[in-house]
Image 1 (cartoon, rainbow, N blue to C red):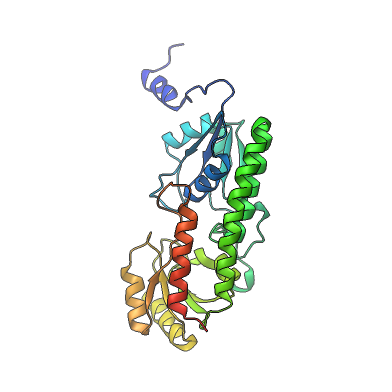
Image 2: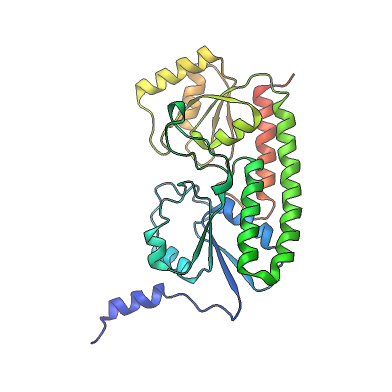
Length: 292
């Protein structure tokens, strides 16, 4: 039976490029998972790390896999993901692309925060925006890498120990700052900073978008402005991945400052990016909330 040329071309396009003998191919779903994985892999021999989503794209909410993504998945031995529902495409699409790939959901060991009133909603997937959680996720990556490449396990452990020590220092800075802030009531763009707020003892009294990408109605905006005034929130925090117009308008109407917090879902792929961005976030929090 002859295979139509268009189908043959598609099959060739999706076919993975053969890896060098003995090489472990690791694929990270989006930027923070890539940053964590690169720091653990370091200079380990025979291990390649690729990033699936472009570093400029952000969180993979409602993301649909492209043929290029499927090709990367087909070539991977390990697929490092956040989990907790962040990568909604996990499951059948990934298994069709590569039945043998091992999916590592790094957030599985993080104590979850549930969204919605009284915690009855789904699990908040933005676990990495907390240095304490990041440590747990890095250790999960180290474990998966060591099981997949036992010969490199000492290298992975050494690199992970070094990185975890830096993350622990970062977490200590946040916790020390959390004990000193004066006003603990804040408003965020959406629920991406819930885990960090838990670490610092902050109270998120409102969110601009309860569903990422879905702007609030006029009535919801008026209600949020009223809440900001009643709760005397210190600031409205927007994110660089979203347009600033709405956050600026709400903060202006409520009479509070607007500041930018970055959840490290976009940006540079340099190994120090997570630490650099989170320390910038810490400075912003202290400036906006004041200290005692």
